[in-house]
Image (cartoon, rainbow, N blue to C red; front, side, top):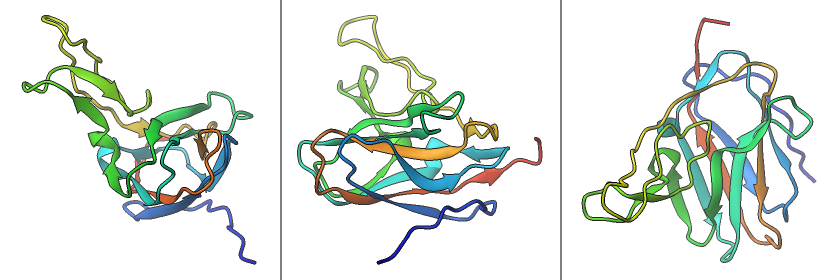
Length: 167
């Protein structure tokens, strides 16, 4: 039986791959704690779905519920697990009109999303804007939760962190 060891060190610019597996609505640590000053951008984070779970979703965030300031879906909000593939977090906003202005659906979490979700009517267009997340060293565990009844999903969270010299 293999065990996953918690990672506590990450190098600047290193590609980090965290395995994810179905968890039936149970908050689960991805076994990595972000250090102070680590920056993650939605352009540098991908969700890989290897084995689908047709009617289920996944949320990914920072901090277990026991950590001050946790946000269980701060990176990804209820993304559907129904199609295998690699999905960049920055592309998880859907514009449904031809002008690409009405962002009615976004799976980008609040720690990355800096835009406005619009409506499907005149003068209610959305604004696509993302922001980076900088680790504070207090709320630091990457966590994820699959929806209830998830029982087949297998995948990974991949990202390229940057470490700022500012603490």
